[in-house]
Length: 333
Image 1 (cartoon, rainbow, N blue to C red):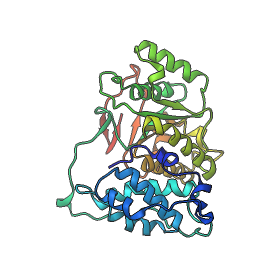
Image 2: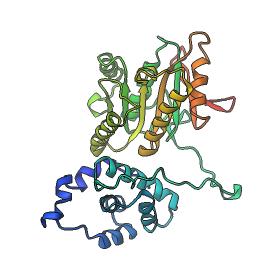
Image 3: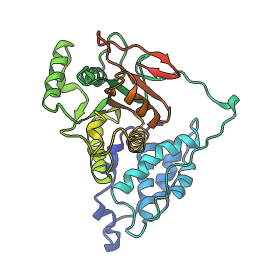
């Protein structure tokens, strides 16, 4: 029950001024009961929930109140937790677009409360779902680690274009979808590399669902991060939600902060987790190894900042080929 296109906001809602034009009598209120009933009947669930969530935010409801209201719209075969996960990005989008009344500063009351305890017998075992078969899982946090000059961006670009075009990745199936790369360097070289990749793989560059930035996104400040998300959502209107967001490189995205500081690295990983959650996609962090220990030093810091979650280490191989293996409890590509 994932959100098919978070960028629907601008299609579904009028400009903010029009939304509040009810004060002048020029606006017809949303028929909330009818829209609610349609959503509960499974009719255009996502579109109707976007309308409802926007109206609840505009009314001044808190996040917790909206989640309670949304619970009643959980469709058969889905859990309340799944409904929360789908609704939270809608709430965030409505607040980011200033749907909330000006005096509702306290309405945003924190992240989705998640049930954390489950009896082991109730845990549903599912086979992993992959972006690249047996290599990269969907909705995962990935580390692509290697020494400076080892070709990390080439690996990231190879993965990105395989997914953006749906072409096999060195014999492994690839799930086609939108790929976003926040490029901290190589802005002129990446398009040339992409064109060469498409020629070599007989793919149409114009058909590739792949977008790059012209500078590193400031991941530590709300305004530029929101602006980036708004652009992602604009592209998602026609290309669908991103399957993978690539941050290349971590050092270029530290915004003057210290990449050797665990706390500040933790903030970056927290932002990556938020992007992963909001878009239900995978996020790849491209990062240099340390100078003293080319294999482990900085990976250990990034690994520690990630909290040993669903996180992988990818290293550049001479043949440019990655294969999944398990190392010390971590998925290593």
